View 1 (cartoon, rainbow, N blue to C red):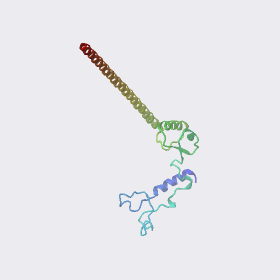
View 2 (cartoon, rainbow, N blue to C red; view 1 turned 60 degrees about the vertical axis):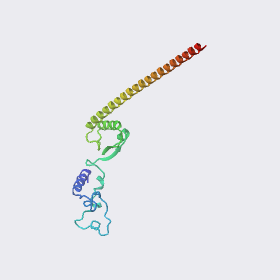
View 3 (cartoon, rainbow, N blue to C red; view 1 turned 120 degrees about the horizontal axis):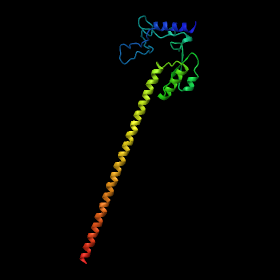
View 4 (tube, helix red, strand yellow; view 1 turned 180 degrees about the vertical axis):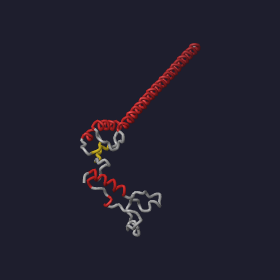
Length: 193
């Protein structure tokens, strides 16, 4: 069978596949509906009684040739940088790893240019617009922060200069008073002589 037919078959099989729910998940809030194998001695689900739920088994798996492929039939490949993107072959789709925004923008641009399908970016053009807007916003915020820092430093310098001036004035007054006291003492001493 060709891949396209197998993909269709897999989709049909998945439509029929039941939900494999953990035993008694509907009874207790703390239990997730995620599948866990029933281990109880008297468990009817473990003993596969009819009407008690289905077990995951090999019969529900998809055909081997299309196992792990996307709905379009592409093999997902994790991409961290531009070199890995360039190494992709036909029949492979790129899944961008968790990386920074600037690097992600570069990868998306290159993927659009090379006409590579991105599996975890729905609309690459819209993503680029949004990302550019985000970067501009970040730059503006950074500039505002820098301005505030500079203003703060200027204010601190002014305050320090004012403090120094006040201290200098106080010292000058102290010196003047000391000189004035000395001259008064000298006058008093001279009068006594």
